Image (cartoon, rainbow over all chains, first blue to last red; front, side):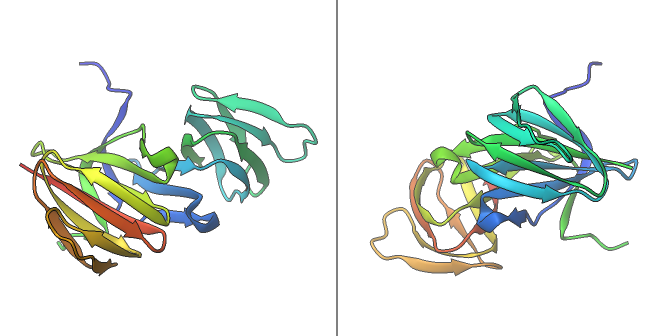
Length: 108
Length: 108
């Protein structure tokens, strides 16, 4: 048996969307059997700032964006297939240049 | 045990979003053990026309919209907590007046 990496299996999904920035960023929460959770989200083109609680792993599934990580003055490009981490209890900025599909894992 | 109706449990979710209308409508596909599937989606304010393959049950989770069903000349209001069905192999129009969160079930 091979794992199907295009899907998350044996999970629960919260029906109601998480809605930010007037719907320009939305996500759905996926809960795993081990108690961990991720969100699958979409950003429309625009610039956004997010606060973190837990440490986050942000995987860009598709799209083209630039990010400014906590404490950094410079911006770096990220695109589909790439990822970045954001420290707990901090904030980061992201400019989505295209519709950007992402998966955010909360790391305890 | 009571069913948690705010979540779908024991499902698979396709990671990649379905993106329509330049991202103004996006959804995620949820697959159930019985082989059925649903999409959980978000519409930003705007007017959209969708074609159906299978018959669809559209449940509005939150938001405020008007719909024009196949063969109808009039529009009717739908809002969070309401639903409507659309015949297979047809099309319908929907005007989202607010960010609209929905669940679409494909009925075989």
